[in-house]
Length: 215
Image (cartoon, rainbow, N blue to C red; front, top):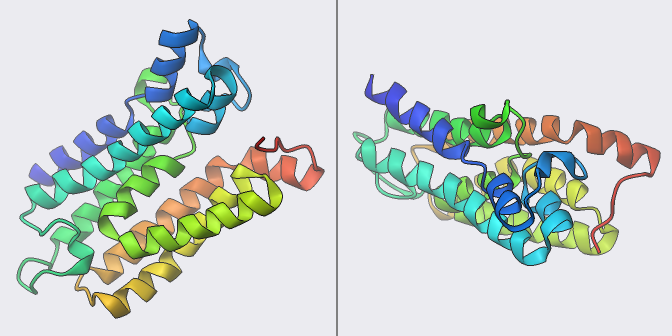
């Protein structure tokens, strides 16, 4: 029951629609009727400006970070459990943290409050892995910046960065050997798959050459 409670808490935390609330408060509009219809930072910036987009990005990332920190505290793990811990403390708890990581991203993507129409999970995933795998997320963010700088496609940068996180998590393991490596890799792989799925319309537009560029 404790594990189920924390997983549900993560989902509902992730489902707080900051982008929707910011656009509603500043523009009196429904962000779901703008651009891609998502509630994430990129779409918010198109409707309400870059400052609103940055605020959305930060708040969405904080959701992911908060969910992992709460889970690790709840299950008596050191914060950033992928980086350390003892064999006794890191048996089943990391799998619960992995479930929490996926739940908070699902909450962002499919918020119950907005008819399950949310964002693409990228910023929330950044928050999750910034706590759980900081080396991996920093390297993935470098990939993101490079791709967006070269192509101006935020969607392409987001997807390529997401799929590199499992690889970079392995690299991180050489620096901080972890009992939680397999749960971390599992969470990173599932999260990447979810983010790719959320970008399926963007993939179609990229293939057709009609995807919006970041300016």
